[in-house]
Image (cartoon, rainbow, N blue to C red; front, side):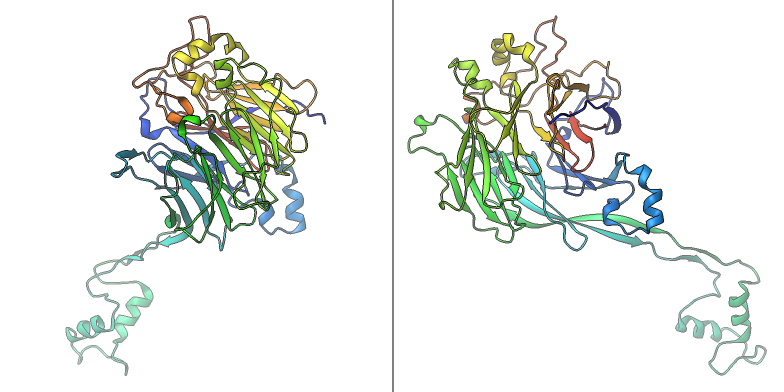
Amino acid sequence: MISTTRQWNFSQVFCERSPDDEIQDADIISAVEFDKSGNHVAVGDRGGRIVIFETKDGKHRAEQHYSRNQLEQLDYVSLNHPEYRYKTEFQSHEPEFDYLKSLEIEENINKLKWCTSLNGSLFILSTNDKTIKLWKVKDRKVKKAREMDFPHQFLSSENALLAEKSFLNVQDIPSVSNGNNLEWEENVANHTFPSQELHSKIADYEDTAYARCRRVYAHAHDFNINSISNNSDGETFISADDLRINLWNLEVTDQSFNIVDMKPSNMEDLTEVITSAEFHPTRCNLLAYSSSRGFIRLVDMRQSALCDYNAMIFQDEEYHVSRLFLTEIVASISDIKFSVDGRHIISRDYMNLKLWDVRMDSSPVATFKIHEHLRPKLCELYNNDSIFDKFECCVSGDGLHFATGSYSNHLRIFSHGVGSEEGATIEASKSPNRKPLRRARRSSLSNLTRGFHRQGHENTDLGNESPWNTSSKLQHLAWHPDSYLIACAAGNTLFFYHA
């Protein structure tokens, strides 16, 4: 399987900022997700808000009806990448406080997942650390009322006509049998009045969208939720925290089934935590989840109610030979994604992006190195907490290309083929030479994953000789399902790149 190298170009940007602008913590983007059609992309931020963008030309051409001649004329456009515009935004989560545990629950959006669309409405799942919500986004057309400026004599209601007639001299002005005088009807027909002119204005239809919360799935996780994933059956989804994975029905909010439980009887015996979980794209009985030890487990829910038995365990044997403390930390997998056909799994740990074949669990098919030059600086990365940063990954619709983020707001894109180990590197900016903004880093990792947390620490560059800035990092991104288009977030700015 050979893949040619593609040229990536800047496409769009939303909420672009200047280097001197100060970013509010609540405005930093924390989740990006395309829907299955690619017509919409949702963005969540740390302030609990969700912003939805839609394609400028409406629905995807495959969903529209054209004649044969129209389709032939549109052939040359098929290679163009979609462009997006603002659709709507709404507040998904609010800050809460758990009085029983004396725990503050932030409004930060951890994950977004689109559900099956019904009757022209959009459905999207969003979650913060503890609560999952199902939102329905509906389009509607709003028409403004007709605005008319009429003279005092011209009143439209029947009562007003009768009142107007009461001021007229019936003997001087002839009238018809229905009570309306002829002069009034002539003036209305000709739009002529003795002292004033008739003015009317009708506003155009306005397309708007409103969001309504349809379901709230709460009080099912003791630890922070790190993943949600929809099942291919369209009826269920999973939510995962550090130690458990729960199975939900979209219609049932007060009950879930625990299908994976990694919590030991004694918490001192805890050796690993769950970092990410995702359903198989086509087989509703399979799901995969990753751990902080660098393992990926593929389980079959048909075998038992509690999926303690693992169908397959994917581990890089060469990577786990070393038992050094820092090596074990960087082996933690932060994100996994299935390819569209379900034959491959892409995983991201701190140093590498790995491609796995679901039929071969001994080693990855390919390993792409993200920032290998930082390996000699692991001690410095550990001291300033950068070693605990989590980066997401995504895969193209054809399963041949993969992308992830790195420091200095760099986007790394790789292809599965000969001579593609280096990949492409793009700085998430319209001006590639722009100096990255230095800002304080806010940790969102749990104590179980990190072991500890240093409060009030600001990340700095790893040495003056290194061009990599660990305080600006590209962590959240998504790949369009049908096009070579990537949406990625740098701070509070959303960038689109196409090939």
